[in-house]
Length: 294
Image (tube, rainbow, N blue to C red; front, side):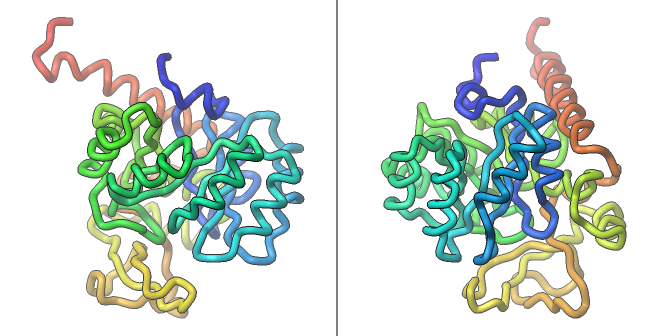
């Protein structure tokens, strides 16, 4: 396969696990990596022991994996611990910090940066980022931008030719993967589909909520946590869109708009294989749909 992102990340399938806080732990990360994708561990909490987490993952799998650093918090120490551990892949979320990118690059890391516009993609590449993650408005959890995935991905691909693009937001099956790659993505960033993975950290109650939800049942509201400064966040719920502030005491589950396609409880390896097989089948059927000769 002529896909530049595969050798860059050392993976076999262009499927990256979204680093969902509260759902993704070492077991799920290692399972996705072992299946040929790239598991990414969220390092969001301030007291995280990054070196220990990396060593635990290395004991679980010999395949590549990534860590995700959330720039809403001070990540200097965490990045330093990852560098000291000789880790190779890091993704940054919630804002670009050029000095941070330079530090990671100087240490030999492959750097991914989440962005929400084509202009931000250009800024990231100018700062030395290797791979841009184009997060669309459909994504679950905290959402950086306000552009839909299918509008954002081709704009980003045009803005940074030669730089691999990962599509994120609303992608929950192989049809979404094929569509994203046709729009210019080199890989996809999948979160909500893995909420029901056997290795996910979700409780049975939350799993039931995810499997019962439709695409119309996610809402965008504001996170009242002052550290997030009223940032946009998508979850399953029934409150008015955007103006709502989530009530943790009532229960809530972060999820993207692709949740309506997520119903099966499966091992992560099975999810990766199913996603990729469906993407290839979808792509193989496109010539007929487009009226092209077989």
